[in-house]
Image 1 (tube, one colour):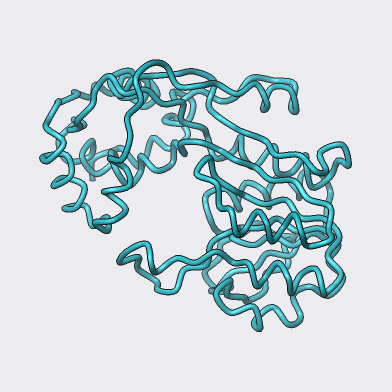
Image 2 (spheres, one colour):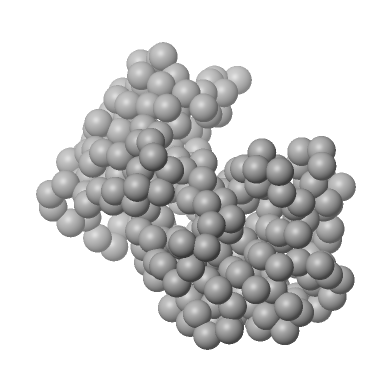
Length: 277
């Protein structure tokens, strides 16, 4: 049995589906099983990463686990203090007999969580994706729906946004294949794109023109706050914009045998989110 935490999240849903396609028995943990909307064949149980005691029976028969690293203390994020690393859950899982953990990390390393996984006594693999393309659903999609435009500072800043399904593909491989044990994998999308180029790629993916409107950092920050993003989250987004192309990792293609999904493909997969209502 494989346990998936964060099973209703952007990556977790793809992990669940990938494991089902591989013929695995999957148990998915969510705070709200009745509204999980997960595929048939998944055993859905209640659990809250912020409260490891809610996992009392979830680990029964589980040998492998996909580890979502963060526990949210409030339903709506007000600031970064509302998020903690789920280190206590790792200890509970190891004590319950879980033998392999694949952790969803970050290029901004979650040091305490990584240390907890690596010192758990379990086989482990840590995934370190960079920029998640799916974050654009929060940052850009509302602007595109309302105005057919993206307002942003730093138009020539580069990134290599990764499709959440690519992260899940690597997670599934690590859960099923012993050769990934003890590895830390940096993951990116297939190409370095400026913000202008990213807007153009999304426009191609949704088959609809999108304008890029350059604004000052102060104006961009105001726009993001108006979308409801917490101030310290917005401030973190503006910390660094290093010059030059974003680094590209070959890991996804090395593991799966095919290239990562492009940002254009990601936009096509999420086209309804950019459509005016």
